[in-house]
Image 1 (cartoon, rainbow, N blue to C red):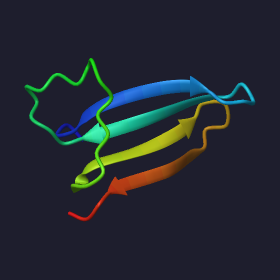
Image 2: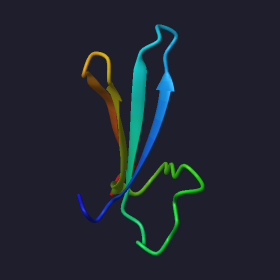
Image 3: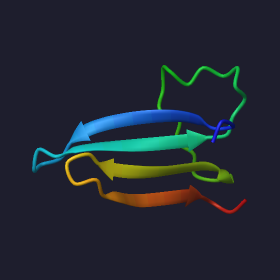
Image 4: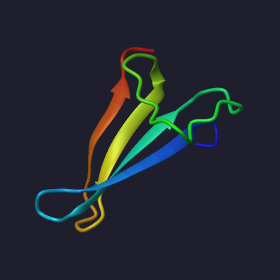
Amino acid sequence: MRKYVRQYVGYLTDNNEVVVKIYLNKIDPDDDPSSDILEYFDGGSNHWSIRINLNTGELYDMEVNGYG
């Protein structure tokens, strides 16, 4: 997991539940991802994401991008 840069994006659903989408991207550690959300549509296991509902503890929508 240390090889991945992690970004956390939180939002409220229509039901006022707190959801966090976690992006994990294996990129050059010198790149600064703090100003933009990094979302990739290819690259296999170098880029993936998952959502967690903090109200229910449910993990869902795990996605591995493209084919590595």
